[in-house]
Length: 302
Image 1: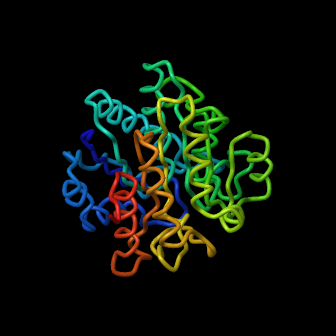
Image 2: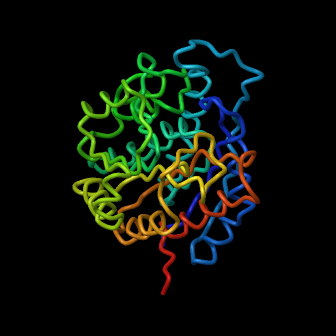
């Protein structure tokens, strides 16, 4: 088993609703590190990456609020995750809002560049996160990181690590999407990425979708990065998220998806983001997130 390095990123500059900065603490309280150790992993918790709060910073460009501060956090995360790869570890990044993925994915992509192979990306989310400063309706940067790692604006995130794009469309898969802005739909259609909406999951079944997703993200790559936004799950099982949308993954669908990720043997790094304890009920969303990480790293029913 590869050792596991855990990084907390209490970043909420990219979100419109405060509280996701407490997500890393909620996941630790749910026992993530201890439960991974019980599976046999050698776990090192690297603590939290210092992240500024909105009250101490200027918003800047209203089309991409706080983007410079977010980019600085992502660059630091990139460097820390690179060291985890150099140590032979599997990095797990706890958010925090989804804009942090520009840093973690950048580090995973750089690791692939050393192996002369592209990185696959599995993005599980109710939202596409493919807005740009030109299409956004809110200016919230957590709605833009997938666009950035594919090489689009905002360039402050796209250039993390000094190279762009981080991933190619043909190895990028979006799963669980069900809430898209009008102009964002056009960006998603034009991007060439593979998309499995909740309608696809309803029609095909989550196992078939998961098998296709890991095949696309894993074929010809150094492995894939998994970026999991807890709002992909239905609010009945994950109430503590900043942007809940009805009609998401059920408890068993989410676990089936993670179990198939584990079975693929192609997972090299993972984000778990957008947990908002202020909106949660007795930490159930962080507990769910912890359980899903365990499934992704090999916990089995039998």
